[in-house]
Length: 256
Image 1 (cartoon, helix red, strand yellow):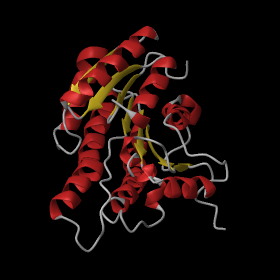
Image 2: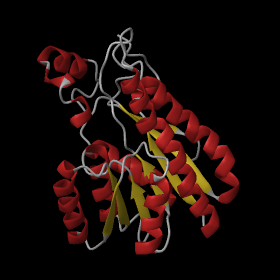
Image 3: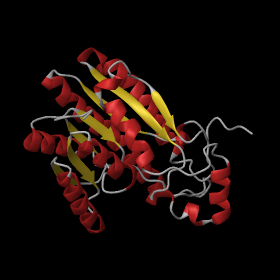
Image 4: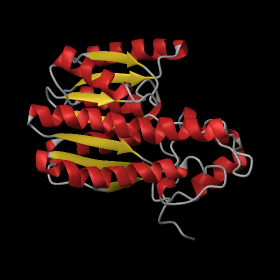
């Protein structure tokens, strides 16, 4: 029970990595605030997730509002305080990656990606950190970045800067928030099979190439991130802040 009686906020938690992290945090004793887009298609997924968390003996609340909205962080914190009395862990997971070429990148696609992945994250982290400071008991903030923070992608010129920005944000927040006992770290997934890359990986040639690039011989699953996120959220990582943890099956170091 690494997170016994802690309250964890997770954005983008209705599916993929966020959902896996929410279930594992509940399994480790936490109550969870589920951040999701608010779309009608997400509601059944959220209902199922709440039921699964309750079956584990913990509780959950849900806040449906776009991750790119600067007010979203305050709404998530308000729900955590109302339902569970405070915030111990904030996991910024929400993100989009509408693959598109650079030279004809639609302005609205670029802006939506930056607002969802980075600008919204900034203000949500700020809201969670202010609450943690007010509580006076420290806390943990974890950003789900990407291996794309470290490498380029011709169809991801709008996406990779946001993921690099999350790493940098965690490094700077580690310095700014350390005096309050708030730890800030990032996890950098490799190629994880989620909705965000479902269409891209439908190309069997591309899929096989990505598997071949991965020393562990398979693509990642959302559950592969749940353990590292839970670890960084827990007291087992009490002296870790400003760190970036690759969770990529060895893909980044495979230069040959």
